[in-house]
Length: 288
Image 1: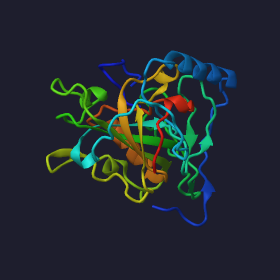
Image 2 (image 1 turned 120 degrees about the horizontal axis):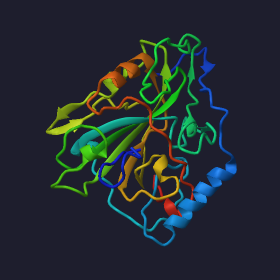
Image 3 (image 1 turned 30 degrees about the vertical axis):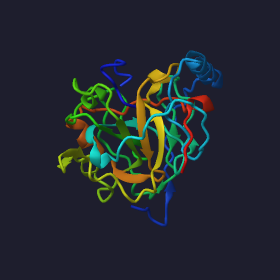
Image 4 (image 1 turned 45 degrees about the vertical axis):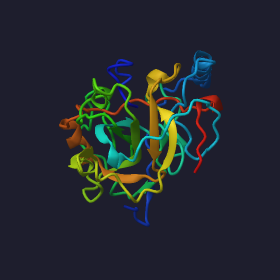
């Protein structure tokens, strides 16, 4: 998800050989399939013939799409400014190493999405005593899956909270790029430190997150939109170039908690998940 202050109001490394499955506990309070079907039908009805561009999230292992609205792929992130970092509880996208459906959840973006199929050792799965990123009430736990979004903009901006940080008075229609990385949380001080993963530096005049993993597979690039459960029944009007890595990175849960306590983006909790977009008329074709 990208949260916007302009168009919508806040809608916003390989494991061991002896492993245990890292499936997160899924809430039993799932809405019925009919509720999700109704949301999909509303999305289809509310977009029919209205010219909305391709939507996100999607199955990155599926290339088919017939949306006729095209726009240029945003430049490489090295030519853009990193403007926001946030994450969602469970992966919004499906594919690669995150294809296990978490369930329908509450119909509002919680306890749904897709789970990591990477495995952790019994030691890595030991629970932590402290609450992690629990500003909205629910603490993250070991074994949880997150999808991290590194948002980039062609505008002359500095890193900050929400999509508002990605826009400028001089550039209200910037090219937007989101680098997506799915992670699984482990109780392991030797796993990736999230503060390092989310570190921001200036490189050649651009704000960058230089430590986005380069060993989690070739990113799947496609044209889409902003995400988040506020768009379950309506389309996002913003155009986004996506790069989603198919493999999962293992991250120390304690470092995520420390990052939530203090960061320039004012992020202190995991965001909800938008229903996977399945209607081909709302998807762009993926050429790779």
